[in-house]
Length: 155
Image (tube, rainbow, N blue to C red; front, side, top):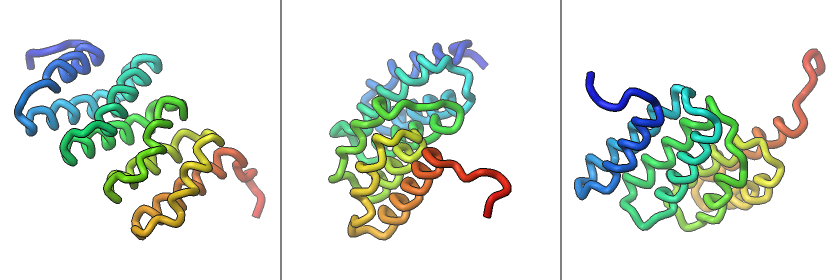
């Protein structure tokens, strides 16, 4: 296989290709970014910078598909990396996003484990979409658990 050799080189290649006029190609670039994030091979600082850029794409006026791919990649990053709330906080103001995209946002906010995310997430407990309310409830549980983990052996 030819192409970039390091994980960051793949990311840089994907960012360059993101300017392509073909929407399918641009979506594929974000899939590459998500795949690299999923490996956990980036340094924490590099991963944070990548997520910052993905957040910008998710909040842009781009197509639904591209914004969904960006949010999917951010969600993928929450497993191998600790994402600071400040990096993903701009997503908390995305009240007008489509319900499926809000579900991604709530998953990301919940994964931060940061108390500052709680008010933003709790707002969505009253959202008209049941999927969004369900994801908000899950995110609230995750945040509260991470703030006050139950002790092993207690009922």
